Length: 98
Image (cartoon, rainbow, N blue to C red; front, side):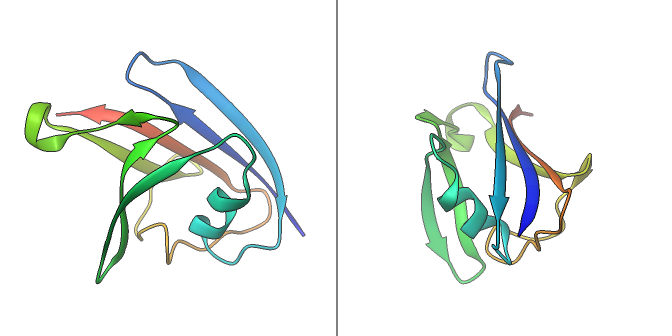
């Protein structure tokens, strides 16, 4: 298995960190396995577009807010469905406003 961390930073800059041992190949699977982490969004041809994490909804149309995804401090180049998970990865999910 792989050991990863997932940090969620909400709109009030409150941070919640999850430590996870996983066999997930992609980030969405790891998110689904993380106890206490909830998320939802809309499915598209590119995979899930996440709009709600841990009950906090980012509404881009209302105030330019969205959830940003980072791995090891770098902006993810892939959506959650295709973002690879490697041993030791540190993921961040950050509520962001333009």
